Image (cartoon, rainbow, N blue to C red; front, side, top):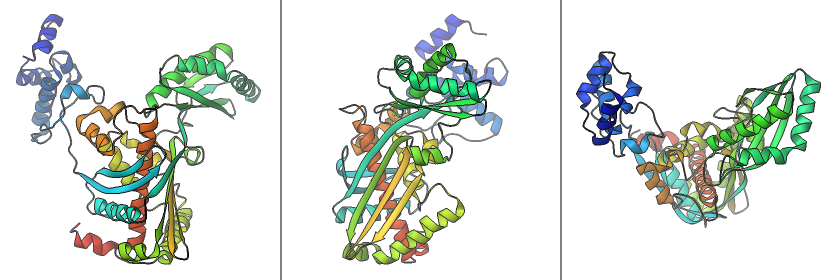
Length: 417
């Protein structure tokens, strides 16, 4: 086997042969994840791709034709073999009147669902024609909820009381791990001999999930040192991360953001080919009554479509579309206008860290005008949340209108989807 000095030389000059490295993996001399120790990131990815091609009997030439530098993705992926490319379209511009986002914005959407961008674009057009959507972030807080073991209810109540009396100590410990995160609250939940502590952090322009995890670990050590509680798991699922949950719908996670618009009747009829009354009825019977009957946590038509498309285009954690679908859409027909709103209770976004630093994702954040850290801190993440909310509102208006006018299937047929 190559010794460490040889491996270092290979990494330094990029001179390792991908074919030879692939042979060593096939022969059992190296594991796939060890290739990064014997070559630069690009060569290791090529060798790994060769191994998969040989063993699976496939051609990965398209997968190997990607635009980002392999080393730039080292913090985002393991066992890199290439890139999966998705079409990215833009809807808009849509006029947004938010506290952090105030102007006209293009909305980048990465998707393979035909007619989606066209649908959202129609909604954006109607919103802009009506003067724009008003958007506000009303709450921020990335959560992490460790679970502790205690002897019983009495001991659990003792731990909960200690936590409530010592939140400043926990904040000091948590905030010592980060220069940006700030502990906002710790809420105890007692279930038999289990104690859950739901920590909530202001994480600035970062999504902040990892920041919250590291900070909570430091705070949990103080709880263990000062109380009878014993940490079982740093995440006890009361956070709640990447799962449908009522607590996120009520208490929020990440950004809680609302957007609304009032559209004149003539604009509704011109852009959507239907009436405010028909849109209200469709929304009530579909999004409210239908969702309630189904026991859904999302009372909306397609908010997840916009959330997922923008998340992928801008480098967000795509699994957080679960929380992002936690949306209530309301519609009201007024005398000469239509009022519509969306409330996304748990939209988790960031403009720094994670996948936001990758080349194409960074470009799409720049398209919106929110790339990197904001001034003041947190303003870019707030702006992104407001723009996404306006985009979700556009998507809701367009789809519910298509249903109300019975144009949904014909739109898909016309676009050949």
